[in-house]
Image (tube, rainbow over all chains, first blue to last red; front, side, top):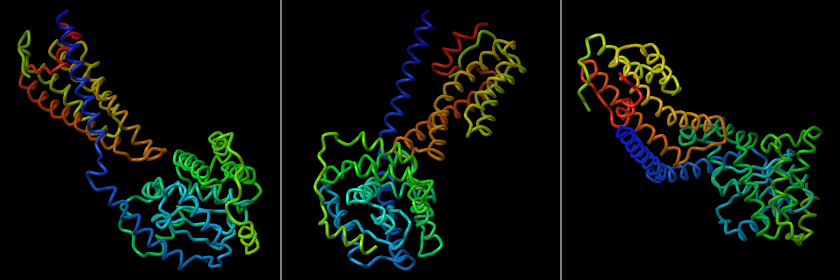
Length: 263
Length: 141
């Protein structure tokens, strides 16, 4: 009997010691201790600068203010109202018929004119922009790149067109993990509500993507980077405050019409 | 810690008892990525010697019990890693902390196992804290 008590007591003490070891080590900020976060930020900044040059050299960047102004205004509003440092966010509108938008390292956002054409109102466009801003704010871009290409490759990235093309391709045509997509969706709903934009329109474009994937090849890029659009649209609708009134437009109607005319 | 055993084990017994620890060591080298292999190797050795002498059975049981408790820790770490590589998980402070803690426990077990294998081979009865007492309870002469 005494032996049983000894075993129980020793087992309990051992369990407590092991649990303490796990709690202590799992609660330690290893990334901070190894300056990993700082190095990751520096790498993101450097990759961002390389990507900026790469886009300007290889892609057709829209310079028409009729195309860039609505994007500029919406990003500015989303950032300002949600306490995001707008001056640190760079965006590029690229002349491309594909329906696509994605975030790049160094707090950059790429929007294709195909997406501007597809959006039926400013809130749909704002929804996609808010979603991509959330990826930037939650540092999903570098997480995805590090996972797909490896952090060592990113930290040694040089001005090599082929590798930069691979980074561009990876971010433009492969999906984030589902968990990250949902996190970005939920943050986007919040950004839109705070900025007085209609989050239901974000769900609308997600529903439309899901419905059109068989018939519209131009949607393929957005579909491949945003799978399960329907279930995500439903989750967005669930997250929207049901009593939220339909907000007034943020952009002057002429600005939206000018953009559509310029496409 | 070395304790006195009810009888003095013979040469063949000390060799087999020592091998029960070596078995888990060999399996550690081969089976690090798949933690269950360590346990299986020790389990097979235990089954093969379950009708052996008391000294051999006692040490096979102690080796098996210690391996079994590490199985849970290693398996959890293994599947967590798989989820990071193929699933939605990302490397976090919690994951790094878990791996370090699991590494410390595995290293402690490894050192204790090597020590036990050497001492048992010399005929000394090595009884680990908790596992030794537990073995006394479940392994009868």
